[in-house]
Image 1 (cartoon, rainbow, N blue to C red):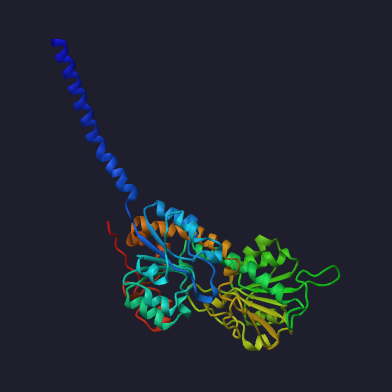
Image 2 (image 1 turned 135 degrees about the vertical axis):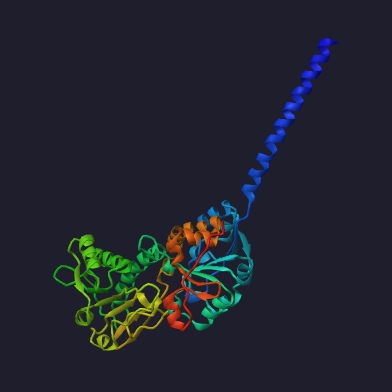
Length: 413
């Protein structure tokens, strides 16, 4: 009987020990599950409509990362089709498919886009949302800016985000645009094109190659120079920054002619060019017309201008926006190619590039909150054009005659 009582007591103690252990474990399991499913932010991705845009703000891989981090992602049905990403690809990552742009906007705390927001899209924005997109407000419409301010939108321009004095998101698109500029020029030099000069870009033995003159030695200029040089063209790069020209010399080992920019050298270069690439960028500002209409009149008949700066207004006085389906026009016997969203021609590559460059900024915002993300990343903060009803970009404020208020962010911790 004594042994039986001891055995029963032992079992009771063991049961109590296990019960207490479970009580200690349950809160840990609960907190783990709570952390696992905790929602951080609602992100909306509408389908792009402007300028025959085929890119999408995030590839499925980027959406997967955001969902795994606890965010809800709403993507408009068909948003990825232009880049050959299906609704099923996104649904497999945990994204929720919605069936209108209005729904993608309405459900979101943060709207991720590619092309500058249209008048209609600005009407769909909800008060105090975050807009994460290329903006180009310096050449934007008054109605769009008014809506951003009225609705207290935090509008972050992807083209203005900085890192180590570079523009990392714009960089990836500029690399693409530089290569495509040469491909476009090569196509419109051909004889099958009306007024085309009938010139092979790289020439042949005994026949000179085409002269490619590039205005600007930034990312677009370097990419275009590399592409043109690889095809055998004669390449001249003109820039007002000697350090950039020295960089060109270093990269290409003196195989590219570099020229200091001034009205005289630009005029000479334009007149000499079979192909003129406009690759001028002033951060956040309208591009200056460094090539005048009189200079264009002096160009060779059938020469090709590719004004990559057109998304900022263009650096050639005779440039005006064209589209992917109708990309060129002729003025003064010169072919003008002025498509503002050239990377959309290779939408899948461009969407991956955009995803790779922008995802870390989205993760930062969703992980730490907007205020803390902007406080902790000065380069991200430089992309903010409007905040809490005020214009925080001086160039945009000057363009639209608005009060300029420097961004002041305080931690939410």
